[in-house]
Length: 153
Image (cartoon, rainbow, N blue to C red):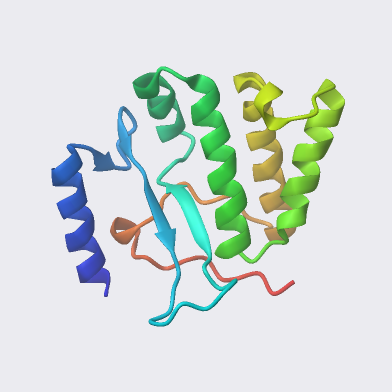
């Protein structure tokens, strides 16, 4: 399967003219688990896989929207931590709500790039606190496709 993923990723890179992991203009992918037969509530998705501390800067530059880039990065941390690392998604939702409350915001859209950057630091701190290791900075077939050991609760 690893070879098939490498081949498929190379095809996507060629088709869109971007490279997965490129710090200047990164290719981001979304990954959805699934079964041969759809089962309600069983589709776990991780959006924006490929964002990390370096590629978020490239996304901010290439998109011209720093707020979008940092919001996207905090989302991948939250989804990956829930789906792959097995952390409770409420840890991240609570941190978001506290950040909004501390800044007097009612909606996510009120948050600016600097707020999302602070929340990314908070989210990475949650991962480190819960798992005693840093949030991964590399993903995908070039890194062997082996997710970290799942947290069992």
